[in-house]
Amino acid sequence: MISDNLNAIKSIIGNNKTTLIAVSKKQPEKNIQEALDCGIRIFGENRVQEAYERWEYRKVDYPDLELHLIGPLQTNKVKSAVELFDVIQTLDREKLAREIVKHRSDMPCFIQVNTGEEDQKAGILPHELKDFYHFCCNDLKMTIRGLMCIPPIDAPAGLHFGLLANKAKILGLKELSMGMSDDYALALQYGATHIRVGSALFGERQS
Ligand SMILES: *Cc1c(COP(=O)(O)O)cnc(C)c1O
Image (spheres, protein in one colour):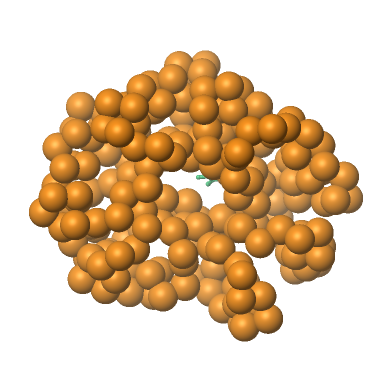
């Protein structure tokens, strides 16, 4: 039951003022409705097209929905992404930043940092973050809310959460999106303000 899972997650969040983002990608419709019936309104999706199919018409019935894009964004999908999503968590390159601003100058964004410096993973490299952040703020006047990371699968996540928290502190950014089903409790200890939880809330995804 999603309500039981939700209560378990909430009890771990405890008194932290942490936002739970329910990652609804690849979940069956009945799970989405169950989550909505539990009062969940903040959802994360990693593909623009899939998110449209799931959420476009629901936005009419649930005007308080808050949708976060947590997957890589191609520049040719920016226009539709900024129309559907309330927050983009995967800003990671200049070209993408310019394109977002072109379509929605006040779009709230998190910068995704590739803390593990993995070749296959999206995100700006840690040593390029400072310049990129200043480019976004100063040159493009963007609304950068915080930083986001996805630690490497085989590394201790705490190291990456610590690195991200440290980078945010240096830049004076208050928000940190980090922690998924397996490690959100740990992420809370490192100051996560947003946790992105899928399977621990909904159960296993459909392939
Ligand atoms: C799928 C996904 C999640 C949720 O993963 P779970 O392990 O199911 O909680 C969180 N963040 C991102 C970026 C994802 O793609």
